[in-house]
Length: 152
Image (cartoon, rainbow, N blue to C red; front, side, top):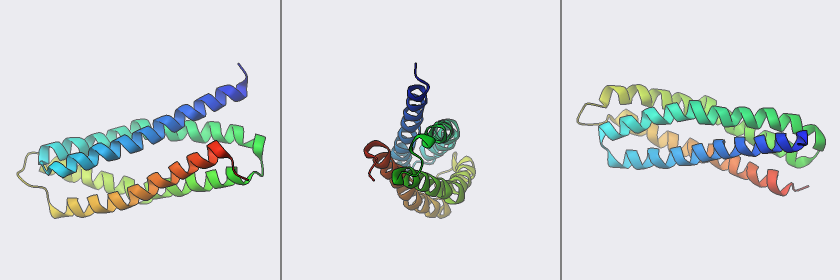
């Protein structure tokens, strides 16, 4: 098999794992939060953290390694620069906002899992997570456009 096709296949696999996880995780976190049931919210919050570290990290690793190995083929192409910039911007949002919020929510969730109510501080963080999550998800989806259509 051509090494480029292997890299491209691994890159697409990384994108599927990454995008699939962030979209599905966001959906079931929002649905769990809507129940306002402390046990359900706590369970979902724990899984958000676990799946982000397992699947999002795996997808990111595959995307970065294979993307950089293939990027030389199109050095100077505007869409490669846009792709890198969007991926980095999304990553910064994850590192600066989303991961700290998720960790704080996970700690809170462990405390309220067996209680009758969820503290207001959890819901404030959930709103922030939603806003930053939408932005951090839209950027890779826009990146998908650049990777597929390769506009000049």
